[in-house]
Image (cartoon, rainbow, N blue to C red; front, side):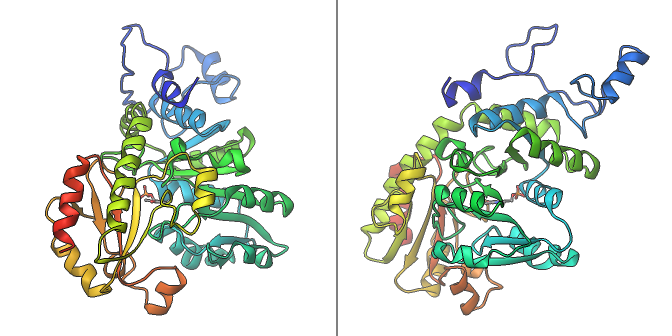
Length: 385
Ligand SMILES: *Cc1c(COP(=O)(O)O)cnc(C)c1O
């Protein structure tokens, strides 16, 4: 079956009430038939729910859908995207291990790499995502994990997943891809050799800016280790949020298609505007990694980065002229969102550090929503004057 059908038709078993849409199982624990049932359940001789920190029907339904969409074997859900990143990394890392990661990663992931993991003598070496040929020289005998996001935030750069898959195999590394920006509708990193794929479900999976969540999928073997670690550390996804995500997944394909259609038209408009110096969008032929984008992505996604000719001051002016769009740090919402990273999410970086992250002071990030394209362009037109 195709992804649209898988996301809609995979549902937990109906209860005795024969409900059509999956109900919400707000229960912290589950009951046993008798002493033998309890013993067998705890001994894991039976695949059944015991306690919602371990598993819950709504959470299982959500995970199963992502597993199918990502061509994975199994998965674990988390309370947030960061809980997914942290618990996934820590499951496999030991004191003295080393990580090789792209320098353009989500802010909190960067903080984990640079501030917290070093507490356990786990060091991270960064590579510039625009220089994949330098990765191999950063691999050490104690390197365990290769970590990337593609497309990146906020620069919308792309790295060749097939190349990374081969590199990970050659050096026996665990390739972990944060696939939040692309969603499994656009790309499935496991097909290119990724071992684990992570999502912040908070973004396009929810799609309406309501709930926080995360998920990691991969092989049965790797997921089992993450599951055993996480059921003891307790970053479990709440059943209510899982229920929301599971419903949202039913429309993920159609939403991502419309988001991408609006974003491509928006990117083309920006590229033609005299106040704009440059535009980065994966499916614009002017994107430096356009060929790679076309190879591994089905659509361009909903994130655009563009540069104003007048730089940082023009960025502030543009944001202040916004009337319809939301000024927010979130993304992947039905509502179009604009951010000026140099004065917000990345304001602590100096000019040199901004350069290191391939980020300039005039860069604006747009998460293109599902409003009518004419209204999106009208808003940009007035804000760019
Ligand atoms: C938002 C985001 C995260 C973190 O997710 P939360 O749900 O906010 O914890 C991780 N990676 C990427 C690429 C993100 O955009």
